[in-house]
Length: 395
Ligand SMILES: Cc1cc2nc3c(=O)[nH]c(=O)nc-3n(C[C@H](O)[C@H](O)[C@H](O)COP(=O)(O)OP(=O)(O)OC[C@H]3O[C@@H](n4cnc5c(N)ncnc54)[C@H](O)[C@@H]3O)c2cc1C
Image (cartoon, rainbow, N blue to C red):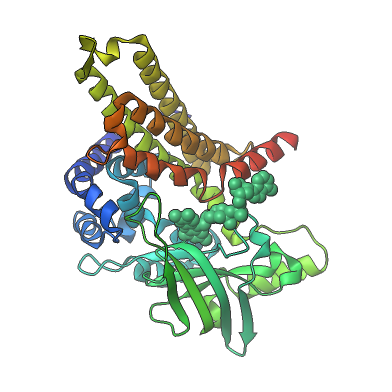
């Protein structure tokens, strides 16, 4: 493993950072206040080639080290995590197609998910339900086979881009008795009758990101829209009925590979708060000297820098392994757990360093604190990551 960034990495990092500085940071407070999806920023990202399927395929997926994606995510999240989720949120349904779908499904649906430079689109991955969050095996949304179609019925909640996406990938149960092997992911294309947005959530942080309920009412889709194909699903269910080794759900497989990407987002927020607090501590005087000259403040900053570096290194290791090996010791979960908890801790320390100014909305630190919290919750809570890590230790 070599984490020396290449020329290519450094050039791309600078390019994304400049975009974040120019187009994301300045508008972040307004989107946070308005809780609106950042379509204009997405369009600008598409215009420079940062948003779009080509960037995923030609720059991110083509990087043999796996580091390019976390590098880019850290920079956009340094700008604003909510807006950044608008730019990268489609990566989750894309990953489901890429890792569990057929080549034909990827070729057909991924371009529709991203749209064009003039008319960018987004995708959504709908897993969570009112009574099934961490426990994905409890999903109740049903996919019933009816001739040449699947008919989907159920209620999804907390879906990023839910209802405003052009392509929704919906995880549903075909045979509830089989648990995970009885589940599959289904592709619901643009404008399919029977899928609609329900309640749009109002949130503590990442407020530029759209989070909503997705309602499926007799939503009919072609048979071939099951991710991976009908034959693969039937074989998986047949094995389960014959009490073969239990398979893993497509949703869980997707979360495993996307964890380092989520970790990188949290690192970006933590770095933003750290840099701001460090500069503030150099400027702000109390008792006749800059507050950074107090060991109590300087040590806090030292620990913040240390934790961010540790989180980034775990993230880079997991990203590298996801491309060049496998997660033998839950390295993906370790990166997500460490980075999420670091972001919450670092942003809280940053507020403390700013004192009263940290708590008010004239300064960006309180927003980073609110934005950070979701990273200990979505795509597997901190408790679930600890379960995954401890199970790996017990193997
Ligand atoms: C802003 C936002 C965006 C989201 N985006 C998406 C999305 O795009 N797609 C999607 O499908 N979902 C999405 N989610 C859902 C998110 O992934 C879930 O909220 C998360 O997985 C937790 O599920 P839950 O809320 O049902 O909590 P629960 O599973 O009910 O957990 C409640 C608490 O119990 C703990 N707990 C549960 N089981 C155990 C256990 N065995 N041992 C110890 N502790 C346990 C949890 O860690 C947590 O602290 C999003 C959520 C939010 C808030």
